Amino acid sequence: ESAIGMVAKSHKTAEKCIRLLRKKQRVRAERSAKHWPKLRPTVFLVSWANAQELVTFLEAAESCPAQVVVLCDTNSNRTRAAAQRWSRDFTVVKCIAVTWDEAVSAAALLTVQAA
Figure (cartoon, helix red, strand yellow):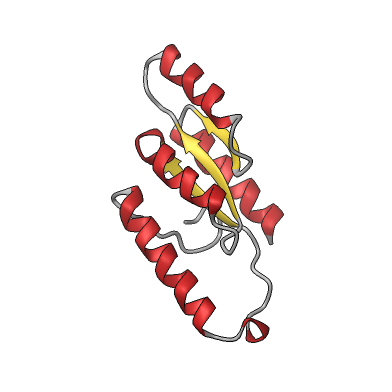
């Protein structure tokens, strides 16, 4: 939180995060859109284990502009290469990070750019 200068929310699984995002979408849809300011992109830092499910949802969710940093900190070069290839299919994925520090730095940079 100190690195990005704002409060971070964490979720144990992609499913729990998606459930919250869907709830927010419903609330926005129920209220008049003219009362809501334009949304700036939300920055997500996602583990490789949760990336496939969450990124697929975020790519399809037009009402939730997103930028994603995927943390792929496995020791396998093959897994990292697979993550890089996979990320090319998703415009919301901005970075595949291989260390926690790299992921936090990328998320902080995206947060500043989105503000």
